[in-house]
Image 1 (tube, one colour):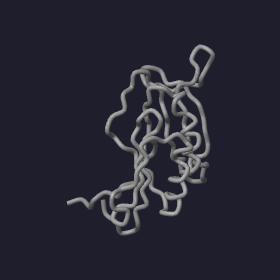
Image 2: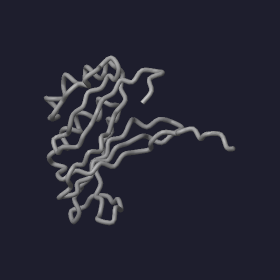
Image 3: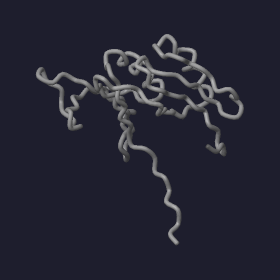
Length: 149
């Protein structure tokens, strides 16, 4: 029997939104707080291919990267406009320290977050739930070493 494989992490997240204009400022404020301060713009066509924006195809995607680190690829999240997209029940949870979680929570409303609420039992599961201005479900979670899912 083979030994269980070690999970090596996520490389990136592609998040669809109906209107990039509705969320770009929100993510522009939130992502640097989560360690993804580098921003780039792309045009993603209907087949999912990524291109440099042009006058014919203005950007419809904003990517937020961590600062590049020697020896490994940078993590990133892409916010991709798809007119007509309806947010589902999927939730993206970002791991942060408890201190950062509360610091960011105080600013979520000013960033444009909607439906901000704490978990019912912050001792058992320290998490802040919220939505971006387009309704994408997000979470900040301060899971401690040894905590299980």
